[in-house]
Length: 205
Image 1 (cartoon, rainbow, N blue to C red):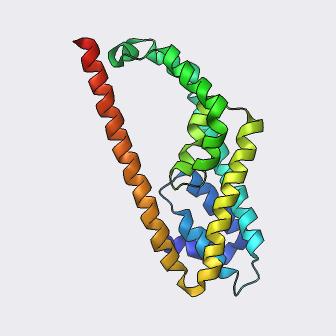
Image 2: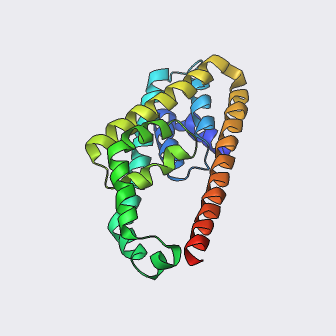
């Protein structure tokens, strides 16, 4: 996979960066660290410019984010409310009002969440889905997505420029950070499931 990404960037330049980052946003396991740091390295000895790479990556990030935002809109909060107001909700002891409250909070405070998560591996992609489900206004979603993505791209592209031929070492170190985030998400899911089961048990007894 890494070799294919490198070939695409070398052959297609900015367009390759845009395409790969858009795909990376839709399929989070594809590492943007490789794309961005390698592209930063390329700017040290090719006609590609650092800011051209950054803006191409930011455009790709926005395209990918909009696709996942659309997925979230398709799985609208109204559908989730109807689902939880039925048998599933009764089994889990959740209801539509709780979902409505959660999305209301996201619409009020979510802009900062979108901004911060755009700078965190894996979450930088997935955050677009709840934003879509909550019906976050485009006037809020777009600028905060662009700003967060721009900051992430600036950091990694510049790390690639600074590291030069040693750009793969940057990928290894940022990969460790990504693994920490992944394990944090796994632990969070298990902790949330455990808390939910405890809550259900208390209500049953």
